[in-house]
Image 1 (tube, rainbow, N blue to C red):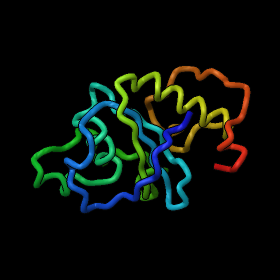
Image 2: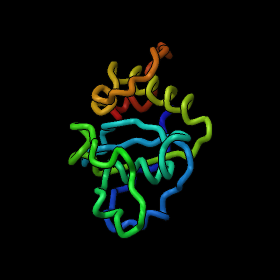
Image 3: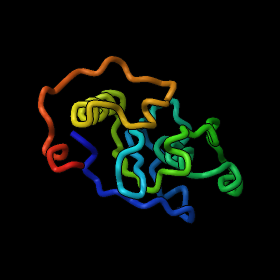
Image 4: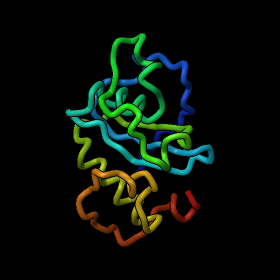
Length: 141
């Protein structure tokens, strides 16, 4: 099952504390709300979902005034950096299994992973199959 929250447009003026500092999963999408990347904020992610979203959308200069930074800031994936416009997330302490579930569903519906996940050096383990397309896939989502 996909993340069911509505897409939210990234606003560079967002206060960092408006995003949760918890573990979970997230999706990034382009201006047409097509998924570019499915990621996870693990226990090793600085500042949880907040840090991961700022890593993809923002810059170190933007965060300097808030006295924090992500060690991977600026190491964006080519298909995501400059193309991502929307995000959605789900706080989930079972983030790893949820990440695999979302990737498996996407892979089953689209017969490939999102472009950013294909470029990501951290590849998921071999994904299973559901052997059926979701209703979202049938509607072209």
